[in-house]
Length: 164
Image 1 (spheres, one colour):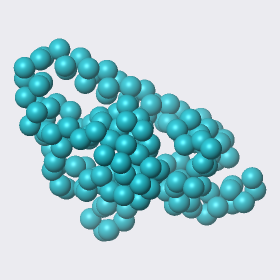
Image 2 (cartoon, rainbow, N blue to C red; image 1 turned 90 degrees about the vertical axis):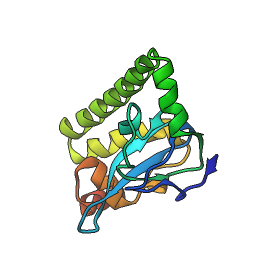
Image 3 (cartoon, helix red, strand yellow; image 1 turned 120 degrees about the vertical axis):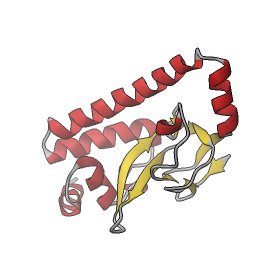
């Protein structure tokens, strides 16, 4: 299945299939009770989502929105869980998927905690370039979303981007 920038793969609170990202990028946006959206994750090629449903079903934690043209493979939930029951060795595959995601999140935490705002922005741009080049970070995320990922105010992002 092909999705284009802005297309929604699934919505927060719904239930449904799992997806394997073949190409492209997705942002996972969670809307809080007060209605404020926050980007809580970036999903890259090779990931199977939602992560929290890889072993047992649960409603979608956020809304998955394509950041660029993306291709995903839909995996019906019933067949996914039936496959797990039939082939327990598949749990190792899931553990490795989650380990990869955890390492990616650890790298992003390092970027957030060890640098100045300008360095944080530079590291995020480098990281995104590996997936979206020749497009730029500014073409796929708003200043508000960049700020959410970096723990910075939108105004700070605006200032940093103006000085580039």
